Image (tube, rainbow, N blue to C red; front, side):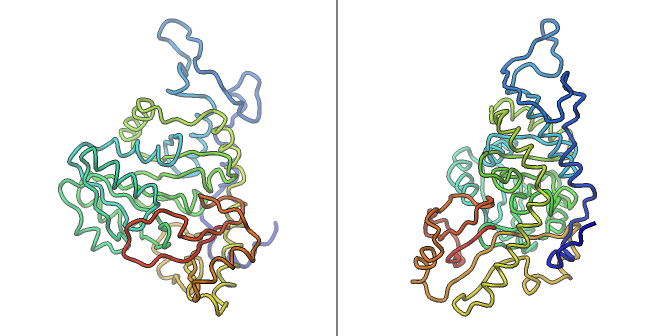
Length: 370
């Protein structure tokens, strides 16, 4: 067996047979008459019925598709979940989850959150009568204080985007579930199923923008949701069909393929991220580096509260001299600025390219994913 890189020591997740599950679950050749070892792309919109109203598992591709079914089974296995659902994008998954609520209900959202989520909650969800409170959920006392009888959903990212705050999911789950029927959603996009399983830590729903690490090849826009509650799954599956927010069979095929290399990709992302973070930390022209993987930023005591070791491969850094931002981009020779993170391409983005979002903290000058 090949010896593991020393830089990964102490950070290996304890999910046995992850790569084997990623390769085989949902891919059983026996489900196809051809016994194909790779699930075929089923482009059919409708499926033959044995008799009027009697189908053999699929009737209309929005309601269910064989290729999508394979992907959902694989994702459920990797998340340690009973169920998984695929959506047309991460925001499509967010919108569908929000449709579980009704006017007058309150959503508590982490105050440091992906810009698209922030925009949807502030500018769209409120138009439908939902109340939105942005809270620093890294402090459970603040989360506790924000919960009201109208609270029905708590939305947390960890690590957060862009300030990379680490949230104790287990502590938040304990706080939330003391108050009854509140759904805790964890956006696990930055961690992927390989480094973190939110459901095992007490979350009710684990969601992803699969556009990022889960697919990992910058050729698919997709959202994923995993959960264990049968009743919650039935409601979300109904909404998935009713809202029509489903991905194409081709995208499902590509994401399914991406899962097969998730383990090796994530390990390499971590190695690269740690190397860049350590380099920047030692550079006198860099004021501060935000990278949760660095041991100087996270103690093993804090890590011990989690069932899985967590890493981020996304880092932010502050330059001492602001005028050096443009020259840094030019000197690196990267004239392509991408609008999403977690792709296989080395990526450097100045925060100024984003629309300003309400925040009380200073934003980093640049951030990078590897």
